[in-house]
Amino acid sequence: MDPFRDLAILQVTGTRLPERINSNKTVIPRETQSVFILGFPFGDRLAVGRRNPAITVSRAVVSSIRRDAYDQIATFRLTAASILATPVS
Image 1 (tube, rainbow, N blue to C red):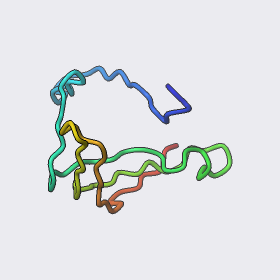
Image 2: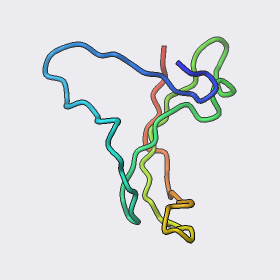
Image 3: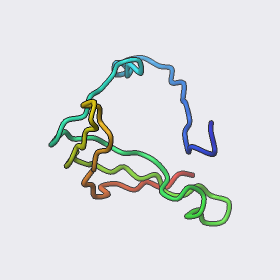
Image 4: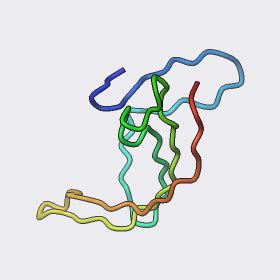
């Protein structure tokens, strides 16, 4: 777990699991592409007492892509709305 980047790596065991995500694959975003954003907004600043804040899952759409002089992606904009919040015990 990396508390500075709000990142954790989980190991899951079991049967009938979905195919794993290939983290070596390069994904090139395109306008109108749907993406999902998962995490704790503002980290522990939204925590109540000693509990973790609610995990949020947001669906977003790549609404704008800006390229630099070398045709590399310089920035992109997401348009999103929160769709799910689940408390973590």
